Image (cartoon, rainbow, N blue to C red):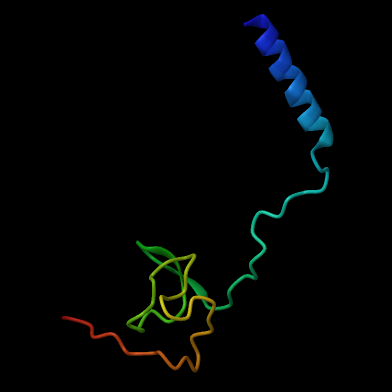
Length: 82
């Protein structure tokens, strides 16, 4: 058991020495310009009145996830119930 632990420590030291030193980008996506905050929901991206909008802060919509919403050929107005 001690030999296995020593071997594992040695292996982890070698991996740590060979690990690249440059910072790893966390999120390389450009900041969306049509991101907004909706009280009680959080941040949303895109046109919320579209039927295909994902209502998410990470994904714009199901058919055109990278956007933009303006001029999208898939736009369909969502029917709001009252």
